[in-house]
Amino acid sequence: MIRLEHVRIALAGIAHNTLRSILTMLGILIGVGSVIVLVAVGTGSAAAVQRTIEGLGTNLLQINRQFAFGAFGRATTGTLSRSSNLTASDVRALEDRSANPDIVAVAPVVNVPSVTAVFQGASYSPALFVGTTSAYQQIKDYRVAEGNFFTDADETQHNRVAVIGQTVATNLFGNTDPVGNVVRFNGVSYQVIGLLAVKGTNGAQDQDDIVIAPLSAVQDTLTGYGASYSSIVVEAASPSRQSAAQAEITATLEQTHHIAAGSPDDFRILNQASLLQTTQSSSRIFTTLLGAVAAISLLVGGIGVMNIMLVTVTERTREIGIRKAIGAKRSDIMAQFVVEAILLTAIGGLLGVFAGVVGSRFTILGIHPIIADYSIFLAFGVAVVTGLFFGLYPASRAARLLPVEALRYE
Image (tube, rainbow, N blue to C red; front, top):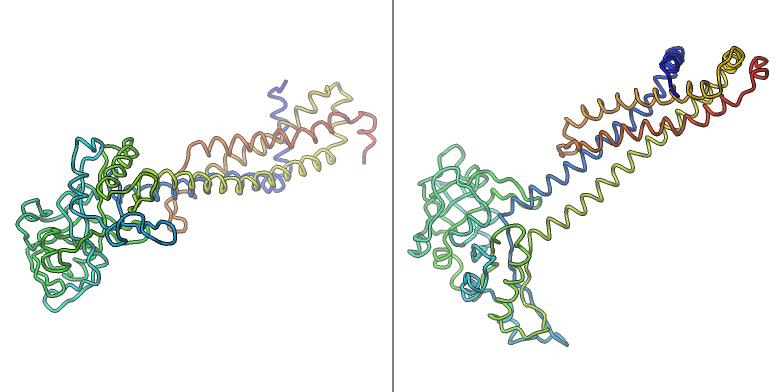
């Protein structure tokens, strides 16, 4: 049984060799601190990826065209061009709530390539020029910082209006208020009626480098009324109903595209929930690997504790002999050195927790670490267990020393 006397003797032993004790604690400190910081980096990275995916839209599903081939490169149904179209009839079918109860909003999208915007001599080419409907704002979760988003009436009346992102506004207008001004896109005049709030990047694209205009006006002036949209974006009723919404989309489009049972689809659905689940799984593996790598330093620190305790036992052999000669039991000697090992790792562990918490307050490689509470308790607990495990052998060795041989030791 460990008594207060054992703790007092252990603290005296640690204080007697201050520098050596500090260096031993340093190994544990680095191990514990590394576990906390690296797990925090992994958690922060996972959170950043999740925010990026969620920033793409609310309960988003995106339908893209995909060429489907049968044997020997022949299209499975109809001609290749027909089988890869996304049309207004698809949108109308998806908007049928009785057939698609898990879908709450649908918006066709036409991407206009190579658009140059000109305003009072300044010119800029936005990364993305989108023709769509007013539902696009809700689905993609765009907020307006100034002005307004265009309405269904603007779409119906073919009004040449547009909302622009912050990047476009900065490059085209500088410090001038863009709302109300007229900009020429590829020579066609559009009035800016809204400025979008900052949305940031999605990892591959600046979401603020965008111009959004009514689909009808874009088709009138820039793209023409082609047979196919670039994509169709859909909002599911809730995150838990995204899979059901995807199944409904598949069934609806297979019907409108006249795809026979068993034939490959000529469209592809990007499910935000599936993407998020995949990235979360990858992030968990990444975080676990980071924690495992950091835990190796804890193992090294534990070996250092064992090494120092063996040296301590050797140096204090005569002391052990004297204590046994005056009546100390084997359990007393063992408890003394086990407590000393645990104290070394516990103090080092507490300092490591402090270092890890402080270190996690800084941005690391562009990632804002997020401390996982479990990592603190796990790292400190492992440090203490490490001290117990690696302290048992030296303590057992000290306890087995015979008093006569210990007193003769020089």
